[in-house]
Image (cartoon, rainbow, N blue to C red; front, top):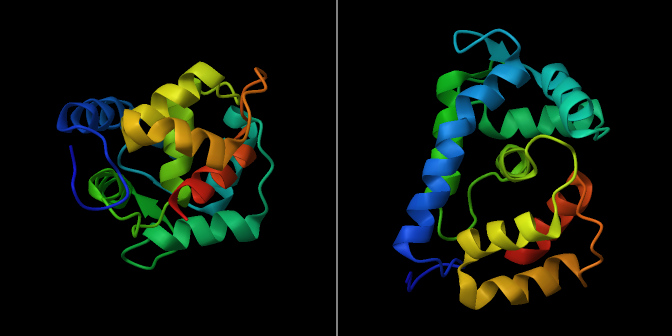
Amino acid sequence: MRKHGIYMSTPEETRYLSDLVLSQLPAIFGRIAAGGPSSKFNPEDLQRYLQTHLDHTASIASTTEAVWEIDDDHDGKISWDEFRTAMVRCLQDQHAREPQQVFNVVLFSVFSGGIGVLSQQSLKGLLNLRFGKELAEDKLTKGFGRDKGTGVRLDEFIHGMSSCIA
């Protein structure tokens, strides 16, 4: 179990989450960039992905900020290398200091199966893997309130995850 940081997941849980997320990154990047691994995506592409694949309406200002957070070469677009590097850094970040906006979209995409709603069961599983079983129930209550049985949409997920790390 981790002794430092906000996450208490076991090394096995951390490895499983990393493997799961990393295995799906190429497909998620391809859906956002719509041109394969040699292409890049911009804020408009991210906005389109959120609407088309996750049934989430985002402003161009919010997607511009999300892209800016991980745009290492400052060209206004995200390459495969920038995307993968940012996601690996978030997976390894024990103190929630890395930019989380695109990472939370990726987590939501992986655990919702890309259908726009994250089931309560999938949410609990994600929180177990991200925070460890000891903290998951507390994070569920703190970030997401009571179990409504209706699932969680992306905007609720982003807000809830922000509450979990605050």
